[in-house]
Image 1 (cartoon, rainbow, N blue to C red):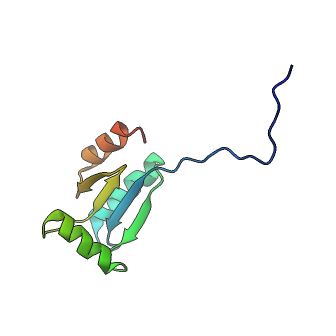
Image 2 (tube, rainbow, N blue to C red; image 1 turned 90 degrees about the horizontal axis):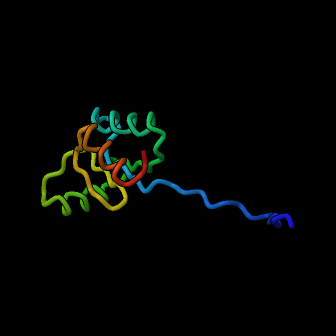
Length: 96
Protein backbone atom coordinates (compact mmCIF):
# COMPACT_ATOMS: atom_id res chain seq x y z
CA UNK A 1 0.00 0.00 0.00
CA UNK A 2 1.51 3.39 -0.95
CA UNK A 3 2.36 5.98 1.68
CA UNK A 4 -0.21 8.79 1.78
CA UNK A 5 1.05 12.15 0.58
CA UNK A 6 0.16 15.12 2.74
CA UNK A 7 -0.64 18.20 0.71
CA UNK A 8 -0.42 21.72 2.05
CA UNK A 9 2.24 20.76 4.60
CA UNK A 10 5.67 22.27 4.19
CA UNK A 11 8.72 20.79 5.88
CA UNK A 12 10.18 22.89 8.67
CA UNK A 13 13.07 25.05 7.55
CA UNK A 14 15.89 25.13 10.06
CA UNK A 15 17.64 28.45 10.48
CA UNK A 16 21.03 28.63 12.06
CA UNK A 17 21.03 30.29 15.44
CA UNK A 18 23.86 32.72 14.60
CA UNK A 19 23.80 36.45 15.28
CA UNK A 20 26.61 38.88 14.48
CA UNK A 21 26.73 42.15 16.43
CA UNK A 22 29.07 44.73 14.95
CA UNK A 23 29.49 47.86 12.87
CA UNK A 24 29.51 48.49 9.12
CA UNK A 25 32.80 50.39 9.44
CA UNK A 26 34.56 47.56 11.33
CA UNK A 27 36.83 45.46 9.10
CA UNK A 28 36.77 42.47 11.45
CA UNK A 29 32.96 42.51 11.51
CA UNK A 30 32.85 42.53 7.71
CA UNK A 31 35.44 39.72 7.53
CA UNK A 32 33.31 37.64 9.91
CA UNK A 33 30.19 38.23 7.81
CA UNK A 34 32.03 37.27 4.60
CA UNK A 35 33.27 34.09 6.26
CA UNK A 36 29.71 33.12 7.22
CA UNK A 37 28.44 34.00 3.73
CA UNK A 38 31.12 31.86 2.06
CA UNK A 39 30.38 28.94 4.39
CA UNK A 40 26.66 29.23 3.59
CA UNK A 41 25.76 29.77 7.24
CA UNK A 42 22.62 31.89 7.66
CA UNK A 43 22.93 34.58 10.29
CA UNK A 44 21.26 37.67 11.66
CA UNK A 45 23.26 40.92 11.61
CA UNK A 46 22.72 43.67 14.20
CA UNK A 47 24.45 46.97 13.42
CA UNK A 48 25.42 48.43 16.79
CA UNK A 49 25.42 51.98 15.38
CA UNK A 50 21.72 51.58 14.61
CA UNK A 51 20.94 49.73 17.88
CA UNK A 52 22.80 51.49 20.72
CA UNK A 53 20.70 49.65 23.30
CA UNK A 54 22.27 46.37 22.17
CA UNK A 55 25.73 47.95 22.39
CA UNK A 56 25.04 48.90 26.03
CA UNK A 57 23.71 45.43 26.79
CA UNK A 58 26.74 43.71 25.24
CA UNK A 59 29.12 46.02 27.13
CA UNK A 60 27.35 45.08 30.35
CA UNK A 61 27.65 41.36 29.51
CA UNK A 62 31.35 41.79 28.67
CA UNK A 63 32.08 43.59 31.91
CA UNK A 64 32.74 47.03 30.43
CA UNK A 65 35.00 46.74 27.42
CA UNK A 66 33.63 45.47 24.14
CA UNK A 67 35.58 44.36 21.09
CA UNK A 68 33.66 44.01 17.82
CA UNK A 69 32.30 41.82 16.51
CA UNK A 70 30.40 39.80 19.06
CA UNK A 71 29.00 36.58 17.62
CA UNK A 72 26.38 34.38 19.24
CA UNK A 73 26.46 30.79 17.96
CA UNK A 74 23.64 28.70 19.45
CA UNK A 75 23.91 30.49 22.80
CA UNK A 76 27.72 30.59 22.87
CA UNK A 77 29.10 34.15 22.97
CA UNK A 78 32.32 34.91 21.10
CA UNK A 79 33.94 38.32 21.39
CA UNK A 80 36.07 39.28 18.40
CA UNK A 81 36.62 35.64 17.43
CA UNK A 82 39.46 34.64 15.14
CA UNK A 83 38.40 32.81 11.95
CA UNK A 84 39.61 29.55 13.54
CA UNK A 85 37.60 30.13 16.75
CA UNK A 86 34.46 30.93 14.76
CA UNK A 87 34.90 27.90 12.51
CA UNK A 88 35.44 25.64 15.51
CA UNK A 89 32.29 26.95 17.21
CA UNK A 90 30.20 26.55 14.05
CA UNK A 91 31.48 22.99 13.60
CA UNK A 92 30.85 22.11 17.23
CA UNK A 93 27.24 23.22 16.86
CA UNK A 94 26.82 21.33 13.59
CA UNK A 95 26.41 24.42 11.41
CA UNK A 96 29.23 23.61 8.99
